[in-house]
Length: 258
Image (cartoon, rainbow, N blue to C red; front, side, top):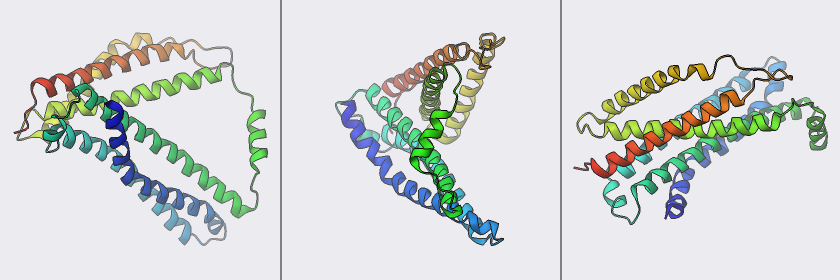
């Protein structure tokens, strides 16, 4: 059933974000193509392109967060909850559906941000007439001497990023669910709950600080990443599970849709 929920949830966010991604990419390419104007002291087009790029980028990041909050709050705690909670779907599946979709779209947004950065560079190279062929670019990457265990560092960093993102999303969901217990001051209570959650995590983080000090360095100058990865991964998973069960318990035992 989780798969069926995701088939609805993922496109629901995509319908609003994909057009913005296209506009973001277009303004990124335009910004790259107008860099030559800056060299000729005609900065008007560069300024306009940069403002458009920044405005669209800001809109996308803010809208992504707002949609993550609204789709969880409205679907599981608001008006739509009457319909969703009578479906033959467990509360755990509902929460998992929202968390997976939110994580996916956050990473899509990050990837699009990286892609727009590449488009700016490509546009600048095209205008300058120094465009590098794909074959030369790949050859250049192969000639780069990477540190030992670089692939492992990348994988561990990716895992930490994913678990950290999930933890942050579950933080938000837990704060919203806790705040929903206060009927007349839901938004204010949610903000207060989120602040308390951050204080809680900060206190636990300080207690775990000894695990991060006295880090060892490898021969290539990189930190022994396992000293960061293992405790960071464990803490992210533990916090995510705690927030998940807070949402699940309150939604099953204390949900009030009146």
